[in-house]
Image (cartoon, rainbow, N blue to C red):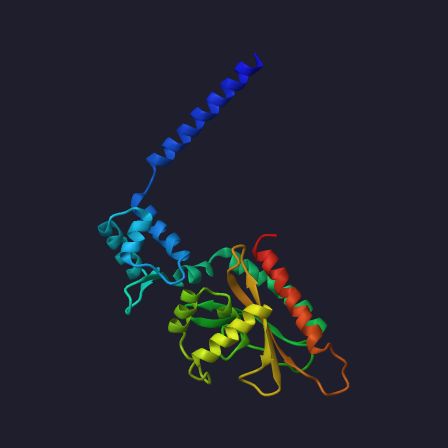
Length: 276
């Protein structure tokens, strides 16, 4: 009797599964699925793929793939290199993700934590995100004292001469790095990019997990910047502190203590963004 009941339950599960599969099949959108297949395929290809390689990988005809590629290029979801006729994923999805509510919640969640850190270390800090190649300050908290170096929300910063810009770039894939460099518009005071130096700096940041060095824009300032990641290990923001050493009688935390506090803040924001 027990075996018969178990068998009936198994049969019922199989029937239910087939009904669900049939419903999914009925409501399929083939064109959309082809486009998503291409985007997902390119997301795992560092050097990009040709039209023929994409068609072969997806078991599609070249004509089908060509129409989809043309549309995706026109809508800026993928880019076509001019030298070797290969397709790579653009940063459009990366930029669109910044409009998603979790990003707004991250900004709101970060403010009280940033305020707590600034009161602890007596330094200002700010949160920065990338948007279409621009490095934008989305949240900023001043130091508790009567002076400090604070950045205005909405300010657009340099890409390769700021800690925030370097950190936002360092943890991207190679195609994404090239894309952000191409899209970036030079801001006032930012020198032309020195690619060999820039890539060397990015390698160092990836190895140590953060950026800490004398400011390239203001004398007497040491910038420290840490990345914030999503649950796919994609960088979504950078939290940065422009550290100014005091020489008066006020005893404030050292640069090493400030670095530890900022690093812990970045970890908390990453855990929050990932839903932990």
